[in-house]
Image (cartoon, rainbow, N blue to C red):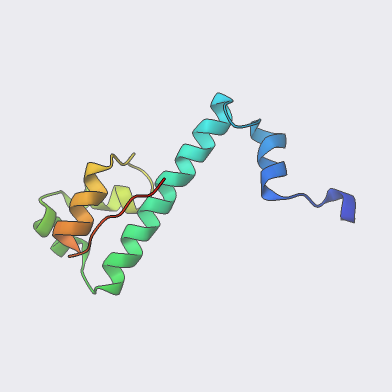
Length: 97
């Protein structure tokens, strides 16, 4: 591999998925956001020492739903992490633009 073969992540995404606004690229970006949300929720749950089963009881969701969110199988609506964070983990969800 030579220096000319090295590219930034942004360059890679543009080369293989197109620029922002192209459906293939937008799908990639949305998938990444869902992945991040799942990882953040899983890490917070583990840090609090809460098992998935316990979390499901606190938020009134099935274990498979929580697992699907944590493993990026389920697309997440904002109401789900809000309830998980506040009711299940005792935290507060803050959003910023």
